[in-house]
Length: 53
Image (cartoon, rainbow, N blue to C red; front, side):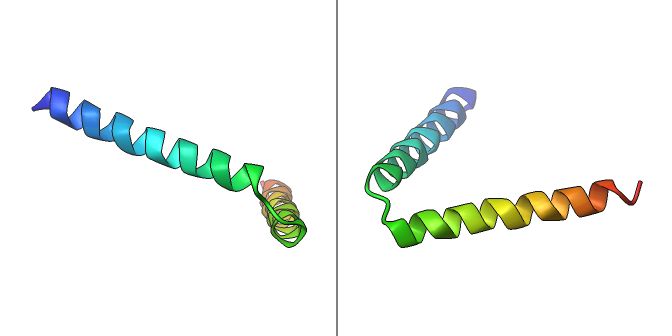
């Protein structure tokens, strides 16, 4: 039982890893811009919430 669970976790992790690598290798300039804006917004949210403590 535990072996099949571990196999499923590794299978899906490997699938998503290769999916992201293929996507990143063929990224367009517009998609790259979306990634940069997303990282910027996420960082800004983290910095805003850190100043409240």
